[in-house]
Image 1 (cartoon, rainbow, N blue to C red):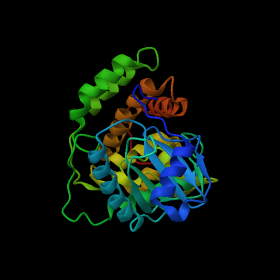
Image 2: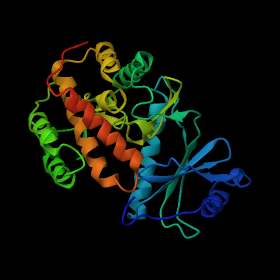
Image 3: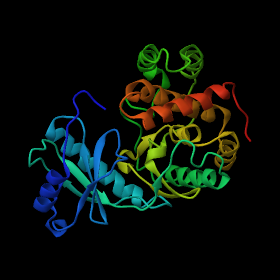
Image 4: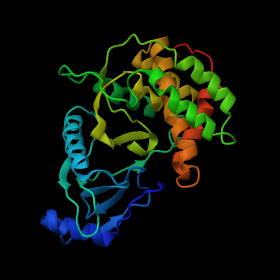
Length: 301
């Protein structure tokens, strides 16, 4: 998926686990086919998931980041009304793999897809319950800090413009560009809240049409409350979106900003993963189709 992508085998994982988690040394190691775009993911035995960064970075900085993510994940475990993996370990390089890595507890469930629960009012209510719980978490004086999603929409204009250029022939770039030209000017009226920051299909586990687990919890942080509304566009059809909005009581402006964050995220995955990760690219296309189908300012359902 990446020009500089690292590789790691189950044998290397088994050796690293044996060194650093000796209590798991006898457990089988299996690489998960439905891995992420950031990490190669392996299941160790029945109770642990090990995640290995796919791209080379400074090992010391990466270890600090993984340790910070473990702290954030542990906090989310205590906040989320749905199961969240608990951090187990942050490991070091070895056996030919050059980067630190992390381990978390395993959660049962099936990864959601952009359409698997799109018509489910029950799933929309589950997403509302999750979002409300995260928003209610103690801020402890924190505010958004950084350059990723969750701050000022206009700060992402150069990135979206680049994505529009690289998406010619893949999406309706004229229509998307018109949407973005409006979205990027939207003001901000709501204070930061605690946010998952990445409520995409692959980070949510479902059984049937119910939410049963929340993954990738290491970026739990203060952000624009509209950021977690991306779930409405990544996962829900028109009727279920109306349920989510009604349950959350979103203002017109917050709802529109949620669309903006969804567009910014979707534009980044279509062109980047079109040849290497069709599932990620399809999520982006599905989200953009939903946004374009409802291009005008909407009202509560």
